[in-house]
Length: 392
Image (cartoon, rainbow, N blue to C red; front, side):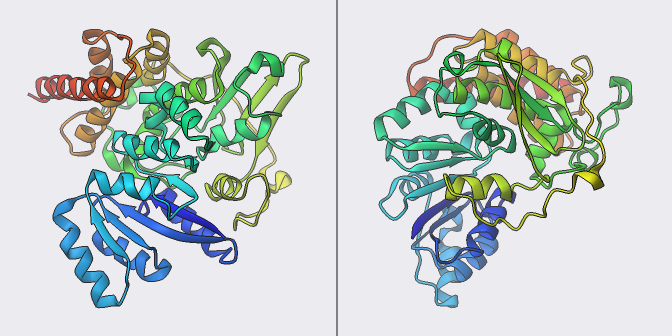
């Protein structure tokens, strides 16, 4: 029986993970569930899956969760706060940790799971973007393994013959990351001035949370994935190419020196990558509809429009700058997206905030988590100042 700690249980990745788990009660048992502030949703999940531990990140809501579970006759141990998240990730109750907390908030628990030697199923790309080298060191120290849950990186993982970071020895020429293009594919900058949060969150193919949906609309999601691919697979920035593929059937490709290109295809459903990670190296039923290529009929590919969707180019710049520049990029993006979703910032100004932050906070080498967290805080404060000026 594989014991699973699910960090970020009330989000879209959490829901998909629990759907796969529920299909295989003989293989998986959920032992820890966490959420940021959604007490009612977390309590309902605890009633269904009966975990040993239930964590609400917001300490102010711990008493409410305790009451809800007690009234429902659920005996889960209730905890709250950052230390509780780390215990949920690193404790002896779980063999496998699904890291699905959105944003920088998931960094410390992800690192804790890596240091504890867990099988880490990573959906929190910000952890890799901010602290890719530290995460690799934590995995090496703990002796665990990382399997990516982003559909693109999971596809790359499946297309590589070995789990080695030296791609040149595997004969890899380049990695091709596919992007749906988001809801505004084909539009010019002048057409995006009046974009609303609801418009940006209306993704044509994927069902995701609002922050990730906005990142997809700006192509920052793909920019973060470029940085993630660099750290996960040891690929240089010049060897990672983004290709827009609106059908979202080809999830990514790996090109080899001999001219071969291996691709992973499937219907756009996160349960495929989640089931692959949970059962690897086996294959299990995920509840995903079979792929019908005749019905799809055609697969289209095009280059991304970097003039309109500048966030992707900014991510490449941050990766090439190195040091804490990706941390600055991520922090500035999170603040800008939050301001946009709150109606304080126009859609096109998201890239302006990020570009200004990168210009004012040039990348410097970092070796310790405390330095990265300080860089994250500094970038957020700078981003907030820029946002306040733009919103005035």
